[in-house]
Amino acid sequence: MTKTNNGIIVWGIIINDVNLISEIEHILQPDFGRIVLKSSATPFNYTDYYENEMGKNLNRLWIVTNNFVSLDKIAEIKHYARKIEDKFRNEQNNRKINLDPGFLTLSNFVLVTTKNYGHRIYLKNGIYAEVTLIFRNKSFQALEWTYPDYREAISFFNEVREYYKKIIGDQKKY
Image (cartoon, rainbow, N blue to C red; front, side):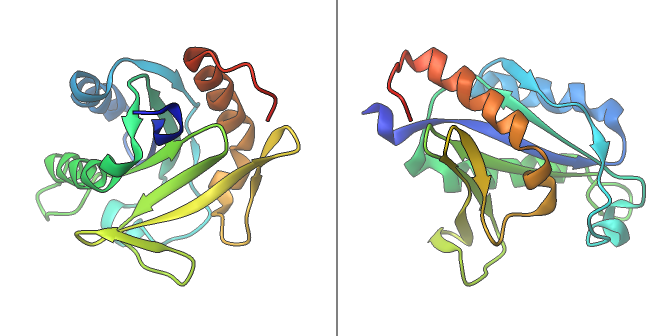
């Protein structure tokens, strides 16, 4: 497998109880490797989309695992994430967490989702992908459809890219 087919997973988490983060990390690590980077939790106040299901006072954070992943496995990884979400359902069968995997390479960050929009590409089994960030002019750049929380976390995604660049040993200038 070539390096261009590989990336690392950045796990986007929206959660109302940050105490559950260590449990999520514990679940992810056997299959995806150790946690190598983690953003700080920040208030998720961009939309009320998740409030009916998950409640108010939600937080957003990202964690990065160190195993290489092939891009052709990303749909299965999204289904894996949905199974983790199901483990954290409350008595009313509502999710306590939203877990969105994304695929980071030197050139872009691809978000994986179950929601279809005009700018998303269908992969398989109800899973879509979108290029959310592109790397240009020495930094990730947002696109027209990039969610605001991803726009505000560009410095974190640049940090993840530097980590990824270091571990693949790539010295090219991008």
